[in-house]
Image 1 (cartoon, rainbow, N blue to C red):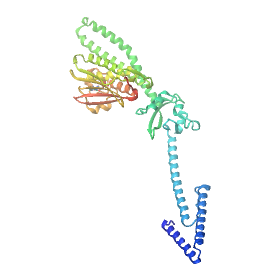
Image 2 (cartoon, protein in one colour; image 1 turned 90 degrees about the vertical axis):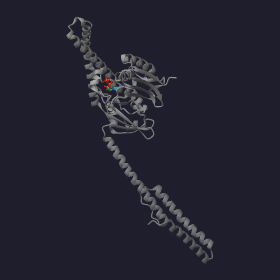
Image 3 (tube, protein in one colour; image 1 turned 180 degrees about the vertical axis):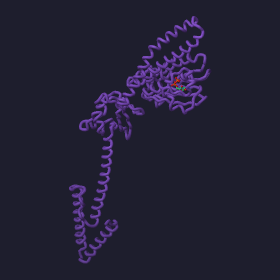
Image 4 (cartoon, rainbow, N blue to C red; image 1 turned 135 degrees about the vertical axis):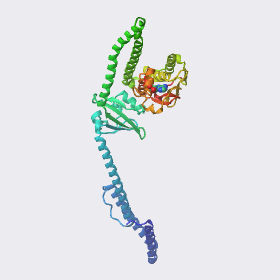
Length: 433
Ligand code: ADP
């Protein structure tokens, strides 16, 4: 049983006093004391050697040597600590085994990398889908095995708000969606999901939309051509046809705009992020768009101003950025009454480059914001048909921004106006001095 240290202390004092008493009785206190202390020292050394042997020469789970008093307590204490430690280790190992078993049962690939991208652990599905082998690949940088520029770019960007889609290097017909989560000190948890079925469905949808759009373009061009000829010779036709021809001509223009937007959306959706790396002169582009907006505003005579607070360029695709920015600016012209105010602003800060379009037009209830960038979503369908919009403008903006790792923020209040802000990350910004 464990005793208090004061018990052992009083035993030592008692022993010491006994030695002095014997020394005084025998008349040789010095010798008695020396013999007594030597005996105690020998006892201590013997037990220290036994402790050392037990700790280093035997299995840790072996029972401790038998001993009495202070040394017995010490042996028991160390033995108890060892058992507690071993139990905790066993429990932890059991937990790790269960986590590994359950992760191995997953159909998705799970990979853990250190702060330099070296692979520390992966599950069975990773070996199946990506071909990683534990014997040779552990500790290797993941880019040595997944040699895809898109993946390297995504991995280094540290912007994992959107997943990355790649083809499996081992089975090119398998499509994988990669999600990365940062944890600890720049360590990463990579999860790759097999999305082959979904990818094919999505591909079929995109192909269908772009094929239909292409197929419709030819007959529509013929119809528009005849309508134009009829409009040119309208005086030779009976008056009852005049309205019909004008309406047909307007509707064919709308259909043409719709097809153009559908094809543009299909193109933007399927463009590779990596290829969007040209230097785009943002201030120049915005000046041109502002000029077009003034022309579009025409009789509405809105006040359209542009504030360029920086000269920075963007890394991206000029055509796509032109479509996105002009959609936002032309929407402001469309949804702002005559003599309204529209302001374009470009500015830069530590987080990146930002572009906003602000108007004091009709605005809309903020409840629409989450759905506004969906295809064909309209706040007020009747009003929008009159404006001649295709309902695809903001969907194009969303996809262009996604391709440029940017985000769209929308603010609006009915009757007070709206503001659309594009936030581009710092690595898409090219400073111009
Ligand atoms: P549309 O071709 O109909 O303009 P968009 O996708 O460009 O389609 O816009 C979707 C809807 O968002 C519009 O129908 C309109 O209701 C609303 N909207 C967009 N921009 C503005 C704006 N600046 N002010 C008010 N409403 C807007």
